[in-house]
Image (cartoon, rainbow, N blue to C red):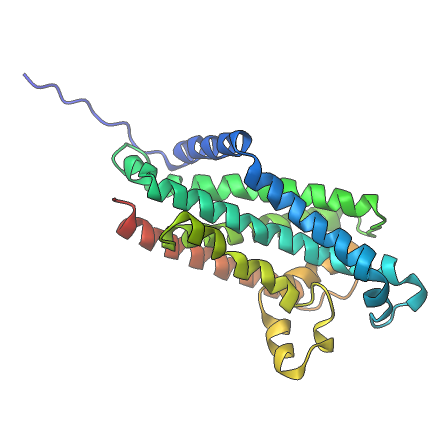
Length: 270
């Protein structure tokens, strides 16, 4: 007589937490990607502030040229925070691609594991990693003279915006990792996200760019995100930036999720 053992019902939340634990354990055991995610933005911050900050800060509109480097630190830090989050997409794409090429994702599909949890574990784990990296980069900024004027509510809003951006970017990173044909390709695809803050208002005002570039710089996803962080941290004018920032995050998150699920159904069985 054959005994049929019922499979454990899938619980998306419980399985997602298990996958999150797996992602966090992977980060601890293989810290190289995490360290690079933090060190890279810190090096960019120190380079732009101490090498270029005096000249760039003196050219900022409405800024006293005598306070160039200090003024530029206040201006550039929101852009560095955006780059920090964008950089985590590379780690997400790499680990997702490793799971794909090593057959781990295919193995999960044969188990009683909620399919959505396999991808959600990567997103949640790397979102936490992004927030830790942002906190450390912000700490370096404070140590070298960054003095925000934000109150408790503004800080809470900053944390919410950063978490939302990290969540959206990492869904895009998952999709890129599944799209890539190799781990090497997966590590390169998200670089386009890292460069976007340079082509927005992260390092210089968008108005100072050539006319043909200003339109892209003003409305690409990272510019309203950076302007929202800048407004919350330093009290500059927010305007429609928060609305655009949240809108872009929703577009990126939904787009990354749909793209990932389509690829998961097509490519995860290898």
